[in-house]
Length: 146
Ligand SMILES: [Zn+2]
Image 1 (cartoon, rainbow, N blue to C red):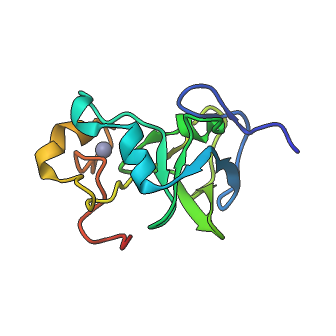
Image 2: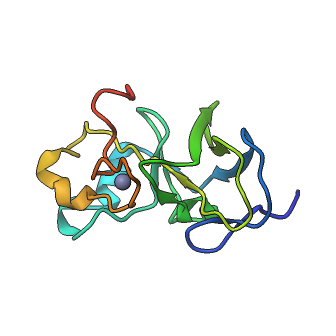
Image 3: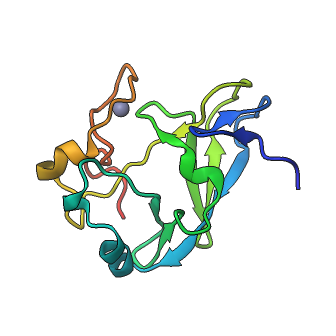
């Protein structure tokens, strides 16, 4: 294994990273959606703040339990990385060349099904500062099946 090209809270590149590089796998405990719902009661949190990644209809990865540093990557509406799901595993892949010191981000694009709706807008408010920030961590409407 190479040393991680990602360092620190927020996930900063420690060296140049070429476009299309899988920089880190998003790991953690693999649980069901029901278990995730039981663990985290969104309605009781002032802001959405968990380390969950939805793999598919059956599986959620809870990176709070033995998860990799991928859980520290922040959301951006204009991200430089994107998650790639392959055979049930999740990798964070760069969408362009990254310079040392750049923060790696990806679009959380939380699904709107399962109760993540407009009524909870403040839970999912985005303040990423991108020029085209859409103001929410929720996925753009109907863009990502799921
Ligand atoms: Zn944003």
